[in-house]
Amino acid sequence: MTLKRFRQACLPLFAFAIAACSSGPQVTRTQELSASADAPYGNILVITLLSSFDSRRYLEDEIVARLAARGTTAVPSTSLMDTRTPVTRATFVKMVEDLDADAILLTQLVDLRSEGTIVDMSPEATVNLRPTGYWNVFSVDTTEYVEPQAIDFKHSLVLLTELYSVKERGPVWGIQSRSQYSISFDRARDYSIVINEAKAITDYLARDGLID
Image 1 (tube, rainbow, N blue to C red):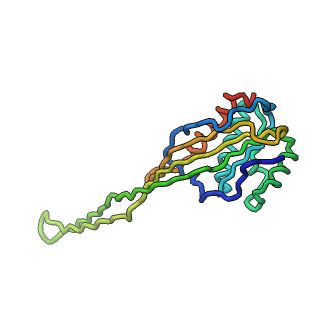
Image 2 (tube, one colour):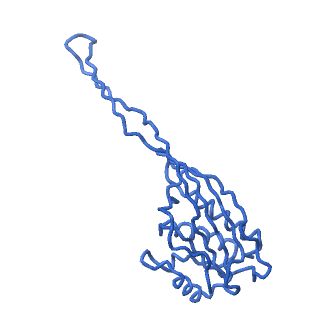
């Protein structure tokens, strides 16, 4: 079995876990479902290729949960390996054989562009009042604290997701998703980018008849 376009060289750390503001991705099909595809598939190995193991795990787990909700059996590759396991073709082929999977869902990072903007922080002041020897007269001490400047980041993310048929030994379907999200110095961390990407991927799998 061959997994085309497997790439071991990944772009720098993918900041899934700190996306504070994101919208649903724009999706385009890179490969329509092949006429020879043996779809629908019911036992899928889900693989994500990113430089961060945790980022891979977050997305794989979210995709698997959404597939399970649709009645499709799926297993995240990160549940069968750890950070020391080689990310190689042989590793994933063994997973396919052990699971007797009929398909592989592969997502990889295609492009990540970032733009930072310096943000001035608001100063904070403390005021101390001390009485003097005169009636209704006070001494006032004011201290102002100014934090260092912060940086807001805006990101453009592109992922490629392909479905490989084990029987056909090659890709039978593919989509590309583009997301815009930002990381602000005063926002709480969340995982909306993971949720949005997983939802788009599974929705298109169902829409194109690759899962029941």
